[in-house]
Image (tube, rainbow, N blue to C red; front, side, top):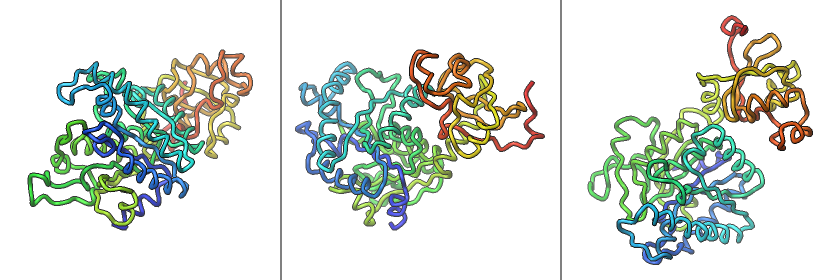
Length: 385
């Protein structure tokens, strides 16, 4: 499909999810060297085309389980966590080794659900991944299986990958699978199952096509991929499910291999703007001078130097209101500092931050990526008292 190749070509930031069944040999517990080497060739090509790439990789438990001699059946939670602890180092070592053959540096990121859901931790994780990408690194992300429990975990890396795509405002999420996309029914059981190449909207009918995991050491089936599609497309990222069993699967995808494309209804930045602008529980506000008003209107970050007053009680990661000197709300954004720290830093230059708050924090009170201008008329936006 030409459309799939165009989606890959036009994306500036791509998240690629790889499941255990593709990466790890079930019998030996070893990484499939030929397969990972071929995929890294594809990733190197994307990087050479100017794209940022994030890998969300399963496999730590599968690798660690074999090393520890644990059975694949009825594995206990604590054994699974032990396997993850042993296998994660081997997993990242493999990615680092093969990426280094193309002069690409790998960086390990382990996430728990709170890292994407809690705003303060969301900002920390987002900033780390974005910095790695800006430095040319390929982050290798996995769930922090060593400390999470069944009650507080993503449960599969499909949804984790979707959360990561939304968190960093990626354009495209690619799920490499053992199947070439979504079917109207399980094709292994229903010979007449129809392949669904283009999904404009995720309806109840589409959701009903989901199945369950079919690999002994994988946790994600089609149902989790559809859940991931909902998360990703709502966050502004398109999503592709494609066959990853063959070597160089991304090359095959760009050359017309069959797959399923889930369309996002909005752009990543627009989705993030809607999330910030739509916040209902604003716990604080700041007032800024005319210079800062012009700066954020020009798309720049808001620096503490332009802040004249701070109101309310908020913590890092909260959405706060930004007002001009006439007390009209002109913008909203995610604060990098608490109300106490913002009060201490208002009107100050970043060079003095460490001596004021005890640590050298970020230069911006609100980064441009986390700030949205409010498009309200003056009549609809009465000044606060």
